Amino acid sequence: MKKILLIVTCLLQFSLIFAASAKYESENYNLNLRYNDVITPGDAIFVRMNISVPKNHKKAKNEPEKKATLQLLQDKKVIESAPFYHLKNKKTGTTEMLGGIPVSLWLKDGNYSIKVIYADSDEDIKEFILPSRLVMRTFPEEVLQLDDRNTSIKTDNSPERAAQIDKLNNILFTTMPADVFSLKKFTTPTESQRYTAYCGDRRTYVYTNGKSSTSLHYGNDYGVPTGTEVHSCAAGKVVMAESRISTGWSVVVEHLPGLYSLYYHMSELSVKEGDMVNQGQLLGKSGATGLATGPHLHWEIRLNGSAVRPEFFLNDFAFDED
Image 1 (tube, rainbow, N blue to C red):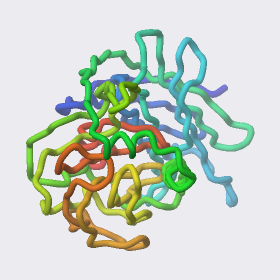
Image 2 (cartoon, rainbow, N blue to C red):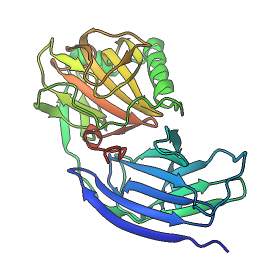
Image 3 (cartoon, helix red, strand yellow):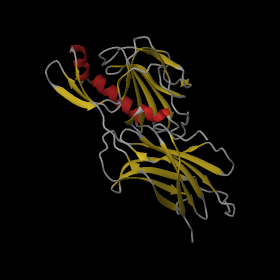
Image 4 (cartoon, helix red, strand yellow):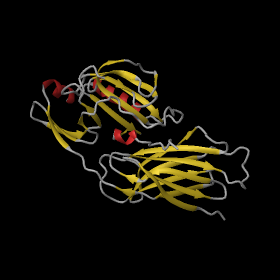
């Protein structure tokens, strides 16, 4: 009979991330997990899992690849789900995996839980609920009066703009399991600390024709002058570098499977699609291209297609600092 133990301890507290640990033991494998146990609107949940084999366990010659899935549940119903991906082994005989899912900016108060589904083989599948707690967050609301130019951009229903939106969504909803380019905590794309808007702000756009629309702001805006240097927040691969109707000159960088950083409204670019970039490398310079009421840099982070507050990633979100 297999015996499974659950041990949960609080390791340390980051400025934005509470790191917890959980340990599961059985006759065939031991799982050591580190994760952020606070479920907060606009943040993410990351779980790093180390799988080791007990000393008395006889390892098969052709063991199947270990698989795992991370889920966010509301009243036991799955509302977010993503597979774990493998990291390079640091120790012989161990396997490391990382999984991340976004927590919706629209999340409402309720009963939520974090689940890990681990498959050591097709026959040996276990489900674990990780201890967690919900911390709600409120977001500011603002009204933006658009001029004729920005009204025209915001209400543009042309096939060209629709094609640009589809192209970007196809990128942001793509997950490449082998694309592990950086596990380090992010750095800000500019030295400026002058923020003019934040991710999750509720915005009402008022058009020159008197009509209006309401939506979320998906990133942080830096109020910097045109020509300010913009640097990559982490190492990765440039998967988009072009001019778009809504976002002007734009750059998108892939960092981990399903994890992307976006830089909008730039005046010029220093990279092209396909380039590999290091953390802090120059991507271009800020501007006021596309839908912009003035010079600024829009910095956005997407995980599995959903916007996540960039501040979350300024911490050791992948639990890589031992």
